[in-house]
Structure formats: C-alpha cells, structure tokens
Amino acid sequence: MKIFLGISGASGVNLGLKLACEIAKRSELHLCVSKNAMNVLEKELNFTDIFYKDGATGLKFNTNQNSAKFDENHEDAKFVNFSSDQGELDFECGDKLQNGNGKFADNAQDLGGNVIKIDALDNCALDDADGEICKFDSSEKNERQDAKILDKFESGKFQNKSEFDKNSAQKDDIYQIWQDLQKYAAIHDDSDLAAAPSSGSFGIDATIVAPCSINTLAKIHAGFADTLITRAAAVALKEQKRLILGVREMPFSTLALEHAAKLSALGAVIAPPVLGYYSGQNSLEDMENFIIGKWLDLLGLEHQIYKRWG
Image (cartoon, rainbow, N blue to C red; front, top):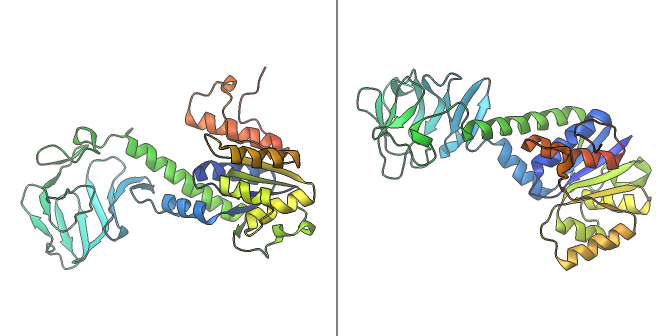
C-alpha cells in the first residue's frame, strides 16, 4: 500500500512526523513537508537551546551556534567547541577557560576559585547583560556568585527532571524520527511537481495532509495545485482515492468551514486532531497516540496504539 503524507501546518510538525513514523512501519510512505513546516523542523533539529547527545546534556549558546556540555551526571561542567570572536575556547573539569594556546582568552577573566567572568558573550544562557560573574563548581549545580542564574534556572540548579531535560529529550526524539524517516520513507521536496506522487499513474492508494493548514485547505478546495502537497491532494480527488485532511485550526472561520464542507461533499475526510477522552490518556504521548491512531484508522492501517471504546 502506497501512502502520501503531506505536512503543511507549521504548528504540529512534531505530530505529523510521529504519524509518518507509524505509517512507515506499516506501509510504503511518500513524505512531503511544506516550506513553512520545514522551517519549523529545521529550528527543532538545530537544538537552539538545549540538546541530548551521547548521554550528555547541554546548553547551546546562541553565539556562533556552539555548545556548552554538561556530563551525564551533572557533576562537572565541561565546555566543548565553544568559540567566540577571540577564537576556540576549552573549559575542562570546571576549573579553566583556555584558548588553543593554553591561555585565558581576552573575553574570559580568571578570578580564582573556579570563578570566571565572561564579558563578551552577551547571548550566553549563563551570562546576563551586565556581564555578571558565573561560578561553576563540582556539585549538581551551576550558579552565579549570588546564587542566581537568570530566571530560567530554578534555584540556580540543574535538575535531572527539569523542563530543560524534558525539552531536550523531546528534541532528541524528533531528531531520531527524522533520521529514521530518511531511511525508511521516500521524502520529496514540496516544490518538486515532477515527483512521482504528482501523477495518478504512480498509484498512491491514500493521501493524508496532517497537520493541514487553512491555506492548504483553501488551495485544495480551489484546485490550486502549485505545490506537491496540493497536487497530490488534487490527484486523490480526481482519481477518487482516499483523501484525509487533518485540518489544524481553532476556532474555524466560516470560510474555512465552507472549504471543508465542500471538500467533504467531494469525498475528502475532514479529520482535525481532536481528542476523545474515553481512551483515558494520562500523558501527552497518550494524547498524540490517540490522534495518530484515528488517522491510521482512516488510512486503513492496523494498529493498537490507543485504547478503543468498549
């Protein structure tokens, strides 16, 4: 079974990718991500704030897109490949900040006692605008001299179960899903109107756009096939194949409802990501699985990823 999945909603890209992963386990998947959705995905995969890699947790400094890593036990601060306008810096074992020549860089001042002052790195997560002193010690914390590191860090400590950890793990999941999809799915550029799914003769059995933006909904209704996603939807309509639109919007305007109603009359299934609480969700993952499971049902793919009624 060949399935085409278009992700056109900039909001909900992660949900669309998780749906793609489940489809790829059960069918031949052809995936296309719109330009706006891809922009969101790229931001996710850049790990602009925090990341997990090889068991380490870390903060990514905005300056030059380099990183500050903490080891998995949060015991010693270790900075790797952290560069500034003054050159490459290396901070090991929580007690020195050096450039490649083993000397303190111009923008870092050794104040003794594992305390350093960073003047030039205004965008760092561990520095604020007035260049306050940051202190790194060997316990499970990382705090400023006055025991406060901005409002982002609760009580000046890094907790194993902090929001940073949760966000990092989620980004790592999305990274892994994207890597897997490149192996197990055919990924097409949304501007490639010559791609195989743009032709009815290719034989796509079902097309789903999820999440589906209101802009994409309107284009499909108008027959305006200027992208691969809208072209694939147009093919599904003309071939009278299954077309599912996971329209992501709340509230719906009258115009959007009119588009959806007319497409429904043409045979499309309008299936917004709406929860049914009878399945007893206890987590965000449960909620996502319920929505993904409903979309898989409409595609005719067997699964057991959510609790069914009765």
